[in-house]
Image (tube, rainbow, N blue to C red):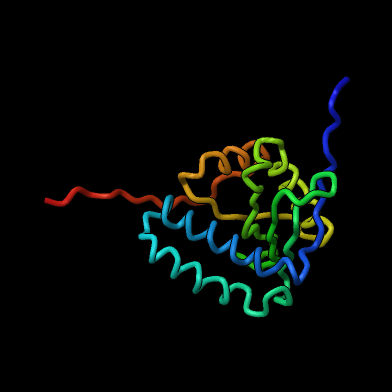
Length: 163
């Protein structure tokens, strides 16, 4: 007997789920800034706290932002945050956050979520998706490359030993 692949879908986040989403997304963003961006823990937390109200000033009602719960066979396994943006004179769908909960990683849900993001963009008449990913996040970078994403820029740094 073979196992069937779970059905993965997106559903809009509810107002009740939004505070937990914000807390988890801020924490993940701050961790990325600290671990891969070379910032102190305190600086990373401060940046996350400052950036969220700037990006989502009206919370769930912020125009052009679409926040989803990723579900597999009806069970929540992660989240996806997309936004319609104008960048370099063109309309794009920007991926702010795609996170699969640790207990559900390694089952293809991240891949499915990104494929569903593509479908969302196409349904809205948007022919390009963009995102930022920290250089040290090799798992995510590998996933994006396998889905056809190409790097368009890179920021690099080197820590120097001081006497």
